[in-house]
Image (cartoon, rainbow, N blue to C red):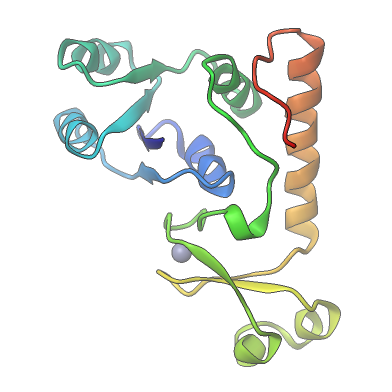
Length: 166
Ligand SMILES: [Zn+2]
């Protein structure tokens, strides 16, 4: 399952990448979004009902996102049947560029991260496309918290149709 998100959905696009979904973001023109979605079999995510209408006419799968709140947007996708597996660096795509992320040896990134970070962590990942280095630091822990909150509220509301992660 691959996505293309409109310009209103930058945060959602970054998160879909973190959850491991190939997600394009940054194309401004509706016609171009429609063209790429059709050609590459991508689901369009949009806040724009006009774009959604055009997509349906072209028989391109589209999800009209109802909320401005990022967490509600994820919950809507869960209700639409999209699986959200546990956040896990090795399954993630680069939130900046959508490139694949791989684990690297600590020595390989020595000159690419601050000394303090190098000392404090043993686990490092790098984006094969843009070269961005990632480690399971404070930001990652924040994301795990947000992910947990989304799931908990989703369960409380009883609208969570996704299956449990084994
Ligand atoms: Zn990247």
